[in-house]
Image (tube, rainbow, N blue to C red; front, top):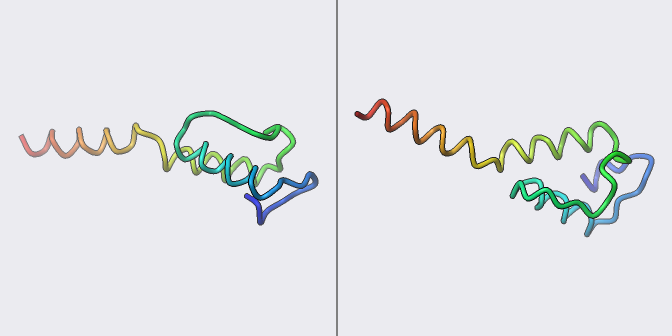
Length: 68
């Protein structure tokens, strides 16, 4: 996110905080998300998908369903 700064500059610590917040899916943001570029918002969305607790649980259900 920091490397893809757009029209509005995002400080490194703010980019780090938003990235960790996205991966842990806690929803905290230190900058206005609407001021980010579309690419920065896509990065946040992908981080939220990776950190989502739904994916590991669904994989466990699929595995356990096939095991029994």
